[in-house]
Length: 74
Image 1 (cartoon, rainbow, N blue to C red):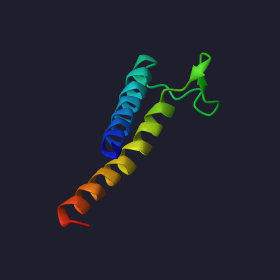
Image 2 (tube, rainbow, N blue to C red):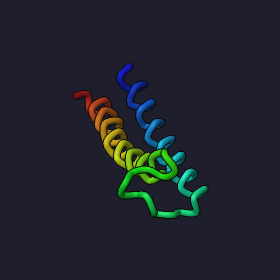
Image 3 (cartoon, rainbow, N blue to C red):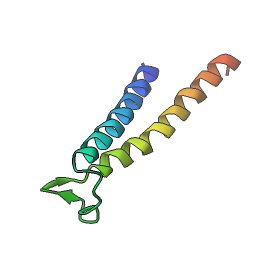
Image 4 (cartoon, rainbow, N blue to C red):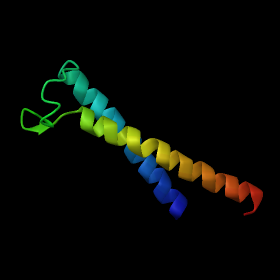
C-alpha cells in the first residue's frame, strides 16, 4: 500500500509540473506577477511547477530506497 501511495505522489508531482509548464506557456512564459504569486487573480504557473519539481526527487528517492531494501533483504 505504501508503494502505491508513493507512486500516486510521484504522479502528482509530474502532473503539477506538466500543469505549471502548460499554464505558463499560455501566458507566453511571462514572469510578471511572480513576486505577488498571482496572475489575473490566480497563482502564477511557476508555483505548481516548483512544487512538482520539489515532489519528484524526494518521491523517487523513497521508491528507489524501498526497491534497494527489497533487493537486499533488509
